[in-house]
Figure 1 (spheres, rainbow, N blue to C red):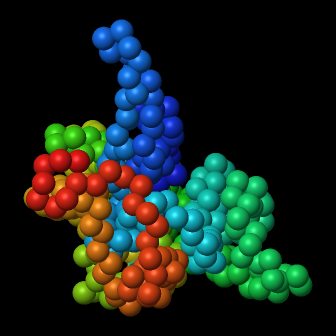
Figure 2: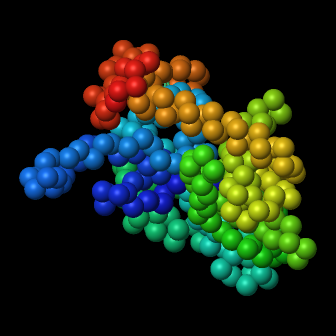
Length: 318
Ligand code: SF4
């Protein structure tokens, strides 16, 4: 899954911290010292972990990362992303059926129920079709979900697959203390013990010159699996339902070491930006998909007040 991590971590304050985990407020608690009650300030913490999606956000635009992870500004659901969530749910649930029954008609029959479930768990997705009283656009959208599900059967044969894991939440801590987390769509384990990590994409495969960016997420997961299990996945597989392509890569140790170095450098940049409050906008063509133009200086907007303590660049004080 083009994963944002939906899991939550218990923060020391008792708050729950969403993926990317940042405390957005300074909490004042009471502490006793020398016999008198002294207010103590639980200092807002930096983001505590990194997922492929949020790493990608920071690489795309540091200010976008801030808006999502630190300010946690709301974003409107999009038709494409919601359809992706729906298709992922259908492919996951199909494996509940016995192997011989994992057919395209069966998979398509799961769509209405999974759409219902999605509306229950995330009521905001109903907004997408609020202006569609006749249900025409919804019907077209569901039809496209059906086509994506159907195309999967031309790329993989689920009657011959027995996933070891589906929608697996993974988390690993590097020696530096950086926590990596994510959700892996599917993990297959061969009888020989070889591991294959599979991710479904409902979009189209990238052009070859952009394949490295697509593989970054998979190498991230491979690094997490390696750190957790001491096993280097034999194969990373991206299944593009939008275009009917499968992109594979067989990682070696040097790939994982390289991605670890890259993540540590990224984390250091995130740490510095968190402390200084210096989150630069980086405008690109992708700004067209950004929900936060109204808060972005590149588009005449003003970011909300920074919710974390700031130290001046070059000073040690926070
Ligand atoms: S509009 Fe562009 S530059 Fe501004 S925050 Fe969004 S992605 Fe960054």
